[in-house]
Length: 99
Image (tube, rainbow, N blue to C red; front, side, top):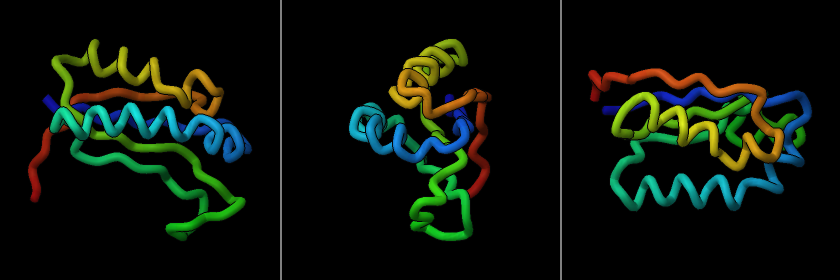
């Protein structure tokens, strides 16, 4: 089943994000290689694909997991959690309707 992981950043998270980004992306790449990743990306703090120093307010990941507990465990072990980028992550089941 698909699960949505919506994470919100702490204030002024950009430098912490940049430092932890390689490890964060490596975990996402593993999901992609396993054909379990539907979508992933950050939420710019301003209306721009390149927010510059404004940074990001959080991230969204939609991926396939065995169950809610597995999705939550994966979210809890994110390098952005360990680096203090995320203030919290919300994990919920996700049902794809379109496209």
